[in-house]
Length: 217
Ligand code: B16
Ligand code: MG
Image (cartoon, helix red, strand yellow):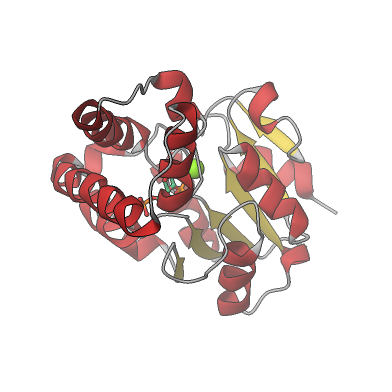
């Protein structure tokens, strides 16, 4: 019986990937590093520190840990400043409708994002009120594909994973949901989230009716 919904943020509720891209690109340009959309795609759903390491590896660069933290902080400052541009117009199509529907139907709802800036993004969207629990990059130490963030959210909702559905747009996010024993909904192409229990191209197709009819017991 499904009682709880746990949502990833970037790529499910809103598309902050473009803002992450612009901030990483600015840092890469300053450092003389190559960075493109193909590399950016590899950063989907992974933590800030894992992201900079992917970019460094792509450029065959190695640096000491303090410098890496400094550079990641620089990127984050650019990213956080760009979040001022996010408004309640920036939900991905279908996301606000689903969140509203879940509220009226009385489901428990949590956020399960890797981002340490999730609260700011939710505030900009005016979305905080849709969530009973906010799990983000500050809530747990181990990031996706570890299931920790979703287990944290479920525990706070007081629900076992088997009663919860995780919505994710990242390959590693679906891996994390499965590792934690959650039901999973993949948002995006087959090659990325085809291993989810059910997949939709976009949030627009992921209506409560569609989701409920798939998971009904
Ligand atoms: P921050 P999600 C993830 O969000 C992004 O997809 C990923 O690109 C980013 O590196 C990560 O958050 C950490 O974000 O630098 O703000 O802590 O998809 O887990 O909601
Ligand atoms: Mg995501």
